[in-house]
Length: 350
Image (cartoon, rainbow, N blue to C red; front, side, top):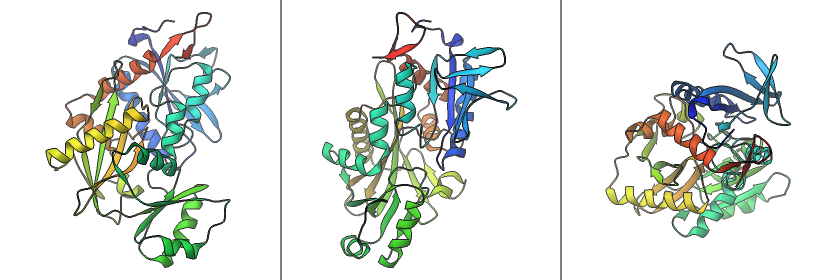
């Protein structure tokens, strides 16, 4: 097995599922990815990670176990090894660095960010602090709470500005998130978030336009910044329903913004991507504050959704690109970051 494999012969594991509330969305994303990779001529296998086990899924839906010792699929009468993993798990363990660390130890190439970048960006509070240190964009005032550490609810009410958002620090798709308008709603929102995560973030609400920017790097580390999308939720905020239910929000791509704002967002997104050492396809969300036009960082998604209702595929289409071609570039980039070991047919990280 060599690094320069013809893509027709490459065996791809599209890894999906996971342990979070984004499980179903991951499956939809996997369907999109698999369809385009199969059309491009790759040998594609769905690998499902669940709390009950890891399985290779046959075209007829049969489950066959994954041997975690080497990440091989145990089909009847044969053991299949994979050339590269296309990671499309939203949430843990695919977006928080756990899967990446496991694959690094086995020397298996994978798409997207490495373990360290994934872990830091996955925790919204830690990520905010690092982004703030870059000095390129504003970050809203926030409080970070741990479930096993005491806090004084009355002091929090006195310190915070309302409205504010309460959300899991390590969660996605707005699962467990609340917009708190009044102090007497705070405790209930905190408990709702703690039901999802061990850490939560309470963040000052910034009134303005929500704008999101997808970008990716190819094998030559050239960064393509995709057209920006404006999200206009019809609900109180862009929650799980608004994100994945057609008609509950408007997503305008390209966003109707000035060239100055567009360039500012693109430059900031690119700087964040580079400083975090991001790889593959990433989406970064911002708020353009009403009245001041100040730009605030909201969050970074290192494995953005690829379902029919997801934003990044819309941006790729608006850029005049083909999804299958972008996915091919992600796979080639993953392989380029690895070199074959001399005594085995597996890979080791550079």
